[in-house]
Image (tube, rainbow, N blue to C red; front, side):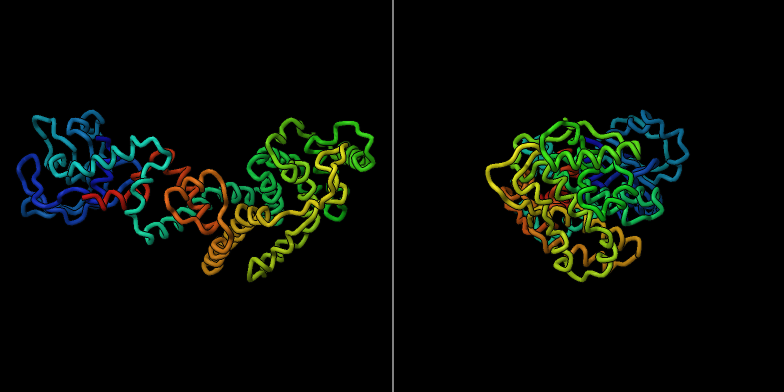
Length: 423
């Protein structure tokens, strides 16, 4: 028995609550088990019970054994003065010197509850409840997924809020920085984040009116302009970057940070940087545009950008490709920008405006985007969990990472449903 499991059992009443008898043979009737306390002090607050014929209101402490009370030195802590009940799994104290009773739950907990817990904790698959998901209602899944999405965005937006606070609530600057980071598309996420930190925002704004200068700034800071190629366009970029670098005392990144291995050429960081340069040259009024959109389709065309013509027959500097093709930002890439940057950004704005309707609209827009495809989402699909939209995939990524992998089944609505449906 684990203490967090016993707390879970008490919190959700997963025991036979009729005819409870304390270790001093007094009958106990539960009126309210109290609310769980995640901070210091007793485990459950403002509970209400009836001991014999006396109704008591106060706090409850939960331990595996009665002796844990003394082991944890609670008798010396005034925070426990208002206790009305000590709940334990088994009673191992020969005497109990306090006025509030001890309730040993061992005989009131069914073997099925313990077996379910062991089954989940010992399961070797990442998704421990995979074989039990069919017993969980679609309504529970639906509600839990929406809560998980909000949790995911709340975690994501902590750093964004700090950036706003540190930059006098400059929303345009926040959006540009997050767009740059987004262009890492997971594999090169670290590189693009370092790139975003290496360029002062004033230089990005200054370069927006000159695509060549924007590419020079981005490629130069990314470390791609340190070589020597007999390539006219490359040399133009070098000339521009050398001037900018010395004028503003810039320090470029190390080129080895960027990853090319096992990637399709259209996803090479060089192509992504060229596409990013084209996008940033259009973002001057992006914040204003976002404030008035009524549909994602209003803004989708804005992101249909193409890398400069040099990249029609290049995927790296200095070497032409056999085939020629324009390097457009594809629909799936635009969806990822919407999922990871644009919609969280709009949700954050709505939160600052205290605009509930706008927040719900942003969530609706997320639900209109196709689900992401990756190995984690494939795991959920094999569990017969329907993944139809980006809201589904985002919430399931949160569920997998923060609940399934660390085995936090007791903190999960799916886990709770499985426990409560056991015999």
